[in-house]
Image 1 (tube, each protein chain N blue to C red):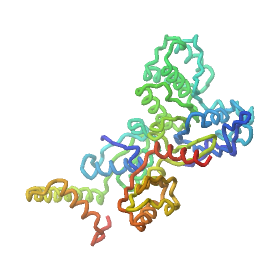
Image 2 (image 1 turned 60 degrees about the vertical axis):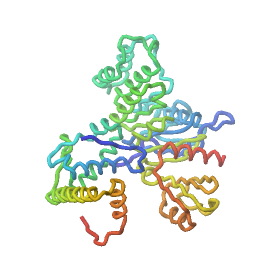
Image 3 (image 1 turned 45 degrees about the vertical axis):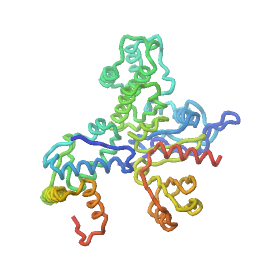
Image 4 (image 1 turned 180 degrees about the vertical axis):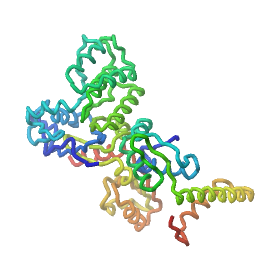
Length: 301
Length: 131
């Protein structure tokens, strides 16, 4: 499989007056993969997505989605045929019923897959006769997802898709994303639900204060990242651990806690050489990595 | 077969999948000719990226344990050599079982036996055997 980028940006930036929402973002999202886009509230995730879709203009920098330039109005219109987007606010017409919405939307897309739409309607247990305005938030999300998937897009972009879904709904959403990916669709979804990203994503990009802090495959994280706890007979010699691979260090008296992104053997050897009385190496989840990375980036700001 | 993938175990999911299928073959839960679900089906069942399953299957195919047939799924396929490995592991399991029974009879507790096994496994091998 050739790993062509489905999304590529170069120094993409957006400012609102003094506020820099996105700063010099170099993003590369591989095709045929599921990529999670993590960040705290206000990190710049939605702004980035809207720039990718040509909905807002970058202040500087640029990029391409499926090989089409995002800052080029004509290209951006063509692009939207191949990209399905489930937005945070799920814009739907309230006066239409669920079924009317599906029929109405299908008319815009020549590649519409009716069978998929009716299948998902049953799977998501959406009431066909209900007016969209009376749907719960979770049901609206499911309807928006149904519309996006039934278009058979090459790229599916979702902004916080699991917001407002109950646990069953979240499961259905994740299954649908996995199934779409199995059909060859590139999936790019923003979230602050770390567990969801950890379960289904191939790669994760972490955004904070408009900057890209991390872009890694989940396999690399699972193989490389470790939490190393060390106890010393004396006060922990923090300075001796400025080694390659050490991402963050915390000390509490004689205890030292490290987050490493690799080079674990050398770090452990160093702890032994400094006569550590106890060394514990444990795998570390994405939640821990996310929190520590964001925290140490805030410390630098 | 049933799988159990742990997102936070410090091991890539595809490796967990490879190991669990290998283990199922070694203990006889999966036999020559048994069918595994297709990549998409298994990915949906486990709610993991299809690339995870594809990577695992391709590794098992490379090892000669799995045969991928276009359109009809994945089949366990054991060469004579890997079948003898399966027999070997089964034989080892029985011998280890007998030894454990013996040690229990001598009054050793299970956690003590486990520690003995673990400690012995950490000892560098005197004879290196390549499979």
